[in-house]
Image 1 (cartoon, helix red, strand yellow):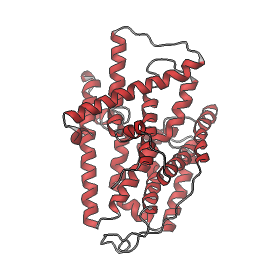
Image 2 (cartoon, one colour; image 1 turned 180 degrees about the horizontal axis):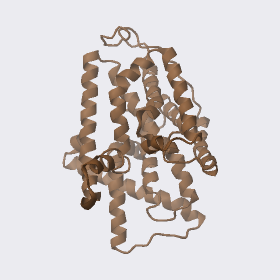
Image 3 (spheres, one colour; image 1 turned 90 degrees about the vertical axis):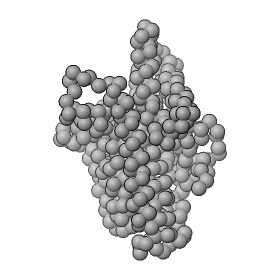
Image 4 (tube, helix red, strand yellow; image 1 turned 180 degrees about the vertical axis):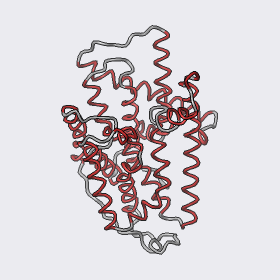
Length: 347
């Protein structure tokens, strides 16, 4: 299977967004400007889910049912190994042995709160288990319309209605919030396999794949990315902003879908450095928190003071310098992992 340059570019932009959100205040200069850019990059994780679902569906659609089960099981086990290895490392770095209890071991360190980005694995575990059901729903057009409509309403409710504390405490780790992106990924995969004869024992797929129409998205639609910080500002003014609706809100849903559809359905000119980053996103995803933790410890040990008072130029540039520094170190770690031939296990 040839590698998609446009998807690598989307992955590169998304992983930079993830690193930016985690590290933008590393050198100081925390401000409303850095918060605006953090909000703008909220499309990153949803786009990763779309891309993930897209490739999972492209693999499943040419397999029979037994092969599909084997494929999903392999994906789950590999993801679980990567999750446990990195979560254990972060646990050993951050654990307070004096206060550790069996319950805290699970809830604090291995349920999505152990390190920045761990929640993404928790989401994928759920989506992998539910992927066959999601595909089953997708094949039934009327049911898909109903489910999507309900989920869109849910996004508005989570964004603009004060919810019980229990729902807020669960945060955006719950699979239901990410199902719309899985549907988009499945749909995009089927737009590129429409008309192919499928090797499947499923009668509903032992014909030509379900017709899936392409949706033209102009490059001007990408300007809708500014809807995300605009919505964040409005929500903060109304006192509605919380951890849950960092991702679960209409603007993030709409913009993430637009960006994903544009990137996957359109040919984009190749830029080698961007593609280089886009093909190494898992390493960056699991190591950026470790790099940030190490740099903070290094800065503290040498007595480096963070910049507190910044002009507008520094407020704009310092967050990007911080993110670029972390990203560069993550790429060096990726190189080291490959040199010792642990990439099949660790990433």
